[in-house]
Amino acid sequence: MLALAFTLAVVALVAFLIVSSITTSNTRVALDPAKLRGFKKDELTSQVVLSFKRPRWANVNLSAIRAQPGVEIRLELTGGDAKVFISSKYAGCFSGLIFELEARDILNLFSKRIQTIYSDFTYDSLPLSILAPIPHTKPMPLAFGERSGRSPGSSLELYALEDYKPYTETKNVMWKKVARMPDERLIVRIRDSSIPVTVRIGLVQAKIRRGEDKLRLMDLVCEAAGMIGNSLLAAGCSLEIIHTSQENRNPIAVHEVSDLDELSDALMHLSDAPKLTNTMEYQFEILARSDFVICGLREMEQQELALAISKKPTVAIAEQGASPVVAGQHTMIYTGSEDVRKLVSKILEI
Image (cartoon, rainbow, N blue to C red):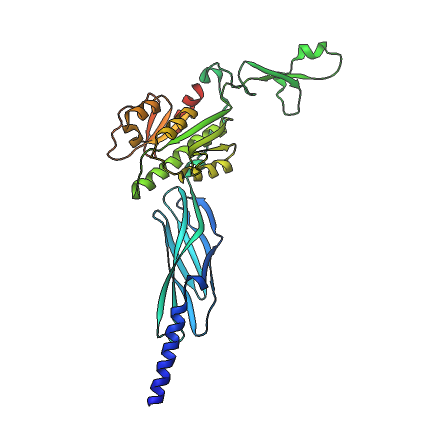
């Protein structure tokens, strides 16, 4: 009996040492794919890949998984496979996961929980506004003013002359000039565009938000910017989206947008923009470079900043308890249900 007890004690000690030796250095958890992108409220799936340099007489299994606030995550274990289902009711860019592993010896005497952070994971939750159908109507000169957009368009102003191409409208062929030409070339008028070639949208953030307030602001910023960007692209404009950057040498980031894919990328960068509250210099620079402004109502509580914002067409995200000191004539308070496309015509008029 004494020998048996001694043997069991030795086995238990070995099992304990084996379980104790298991750390994050000999375990690795990853997702395949590690980058997910979809529209908010959609549930996306990724496979969990668990690598373990297993010593004898031990098993390691995934027991739980956690994400940052705003992300709903569900773990499904089937046999030896594990799948993660991810969704969010908020638009924005989310990164990083926390995996919890459980190590056990094969005799089931001892167990140990290991927590590991997986920083390579990125989940892009796109706003639903970029799915909204946009009517493709031609801008009328009376609606957009008489200034030149310095690009081809449909106004009454002459932009340039060029040779006829198969897709050119025949009504623009200069028949009298063609009749006087010695060769058979067809010359057409290219009319000027009354809309700007590029519209610059700036995000002004001078206040720190946390928890639900931060998530809600991020969501509504993406929704508003998505609808504005989608409308401007449909009108024939390109975009620049401007916000603060994490780069010390260049604290202001500019994203050029010419299609919906680039708009989606820019919106995810916009939602993840750092909040540089230690100086107002960057916020005023963003304002100076922008044709259109998106901000929270709390940014409009500071007198000097609010006055500068009020001079631009603005979408101000509604925030509970905020008391703006001034609002401009072309400022829309946005709660998520307003049609911000009404402001697009104001951008093109100015």
